[in-house]
Image 1 (tube, rainbow, N blue to C red):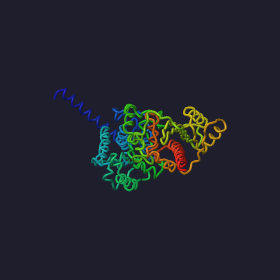
Image 2 (image 1 turned 60 degrees about the vertical axis):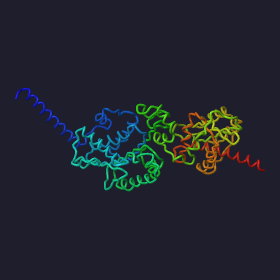
Image 3 (image 1 turned 45 degrees about the vertical axis):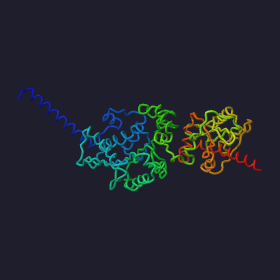
Image 4 (image 1 turned 60 degrees about the horizontal axis):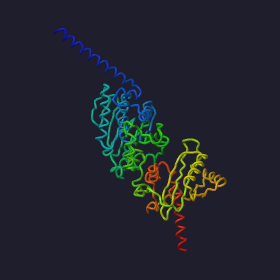
Length: 471
């Protein structure tokens, strides 16, 4: 055997020894739970991905709290193709078990096959890191050899006899067809309540990841049952709205590298209802709640007729607001021609009393309304008193009767009978329609209140007019 061969054998032997040293070191680290913070681990394990996008950093912060020993109940709502599953359902379980090989993880998805893909993807990450596994090696379940395991299941087949330290549920509903099926929604809910939640341990953490298809999905039912305060809700719409969790200005996309604003706006234009649910995490009842989506179809105008009169309607926030955390004020403006109603303008914002007064005067100068309706409650009362004493504006105090839902239902016939028309290219129209069709399950209702106030006033004038003709 020549010297060259001896050198090759020597190098090979040293390589084996070095590999064995690394393996033993990794095994020792695993026993001690020595693993760096999640963000560093992500970059080391999968450097081919970008992990420092703002929306991912926010998720990492919440997941790190689970690692640091806090019991968490987290709901992550994000649009498709923004890394929620890759980040939370594949990488985080691998990280969690590397740090805590004695822990038990359950991962659920809409069917067993899809859940197994998550399970095996997590395992491959640990194989890449020379993790030492136990003797169980199935697609839907594998263990660490130190008491821990990852077990996956599908909501269609269910899970039995297993408790966990960490339960991750990633999109239990497959598509819109299943989402619209009350049978499927009930099946998901029953599986969660009776098979998963009933086996919750004292320190079990839950992570539920959804792209929302339906208002009555798993998240909708959980929030109705538990209240929003029972869950840490990370809701990140594709296009930013007010009070964005990662500090985006309204209108900014979640991640330009994933989906440009131009593409998002096109998808919103092509299918507003689908966009509101999947991309903005704001699903409405099929076709709308009280106000149906169909009421707006073909109800648009390019030019206005000569109007008989104009009505401006102000819905004030319930408490004076001096910061961005206050509730909204909405001002809608309407024109009437014969028995047809034309929406002229809509403004909503968070403002204090002085800004509200200034906006009311500005809208009056712009549209010269025949009637200025102001709700006679709290902020509205002060505005009525000041404007009445200092101006000649045609102020009409409105004392609201009944709750918000009753007031909107009263003017629904105007929508259903196609009596209302909307400016075709108004920048505010999309948000307005989404709030209208989402009520009463949506987040905001200020534009709804301003609308019902105006339309009920106009409708009463119609009725009085026709009554006078019959007398």
